[in-house]
Amino acid sequence: MTKQGVAGLDEVARRIGQRFARAEPRHRALAYLKGLLSPLPRKNGWQLAAQAGDSSPYGMQHLLGRASWNAEQVRDDLRAYVVDHLGDPEGVLIVDETGFLKKGAQSAGVQRQYSGTAGRIENCQVGVFLAYYTTCGHTFLDRALYLPRSWTAQAQRCQAAGIPHAVGFATKPMLARQMLQRALDAGVPARWVTGDAVYGSDSQFRHFLESRPLAYVLGITSNYTLRPYTAGALAEQLPKQAWRRRSAGTGSKGPRRYEWALHRIYLDDTGWDHWLLVRRQLKPPHERAYYRVFAPANTTLEQMVAVAGKRWAVEECFEIAKGQCGLDEYEVRSWTGWHRHVTLSLLAHAYLTVVRAQAANPKQVKKRPPRGNSSKS
Image 1: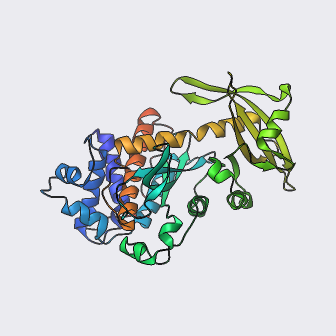
Image 2: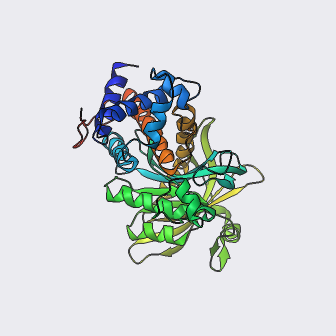
Image 3: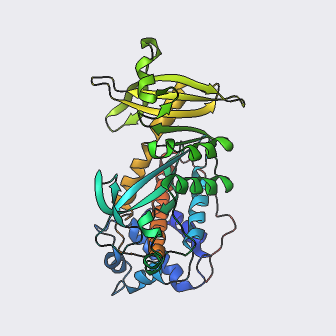
């Protein structure tokens, strides 16, 4: 690890140090982070323990299950760390979910449900995540474990998995709204929110953003109703001259070029417009994607297209977090264990993002000391 990397990890350790009343779990948490950042081929309890020089995984298991610390407070430290180094008033907040394949029926929230990771219905847990895109880099700010109704309807099952009594059923858009509320209340600078049709089709989620107000580009389905038409039927009626060829950003194979068309749905009395944005592929069969947009009336097509393209950043975040930071390699079953492991994994991902951004743009990425945090010995 470079000197810059060591210094950066020391900063992370100082930030979260106050969350641990005792030295042993504090040092264990740093060892866990180092293990997640190491080139280990697998990052389960045994491998992380061996990396730390332990003869058994007991210490790591204790950190995730029984040690005294609050993962929500460390999540707040993660968010502050990201904003301090990458914060951008033009930032884009991205909501999305990912699946974690599991065996058995004891892991908190597990059931047969759709997993975007597998592309089909599998026995899995599903986590909802809030990512943050800025010109310096993109990483995560928050996470929430989705509990299906099959779980929240069974108090004994929830108790066995360590799920707090106060936790009830919440849809994925509700979880995303709670994470956005936390981020905005904490002062995360951002101008836009984007997400797929799970979120764009939820009227309460959209109304929450409109009440802030916060601009959004949210996916919807072709049969989404925009009275008196569906989004698909309305797109069919758009004239040829409505379509413009634009790039939604650069992908692994170069610019992601599509044809885009914009149709104003109505003008809000606050001067913010509601639009239908349609994307179609350049070549037959000209497959289309649909978005609802809420933004100031002077927002350009190019700005909307750019935001729509940034939603792909969360997929890259998931890929790196799972491939390099052990996001999906946990062996815990409890509610507490899931949130602790995932929080530390997201912190490892944020650290990598900041270090890489500082190396690429040393004058652009902020280097600020932790605010109000000091480790205890």
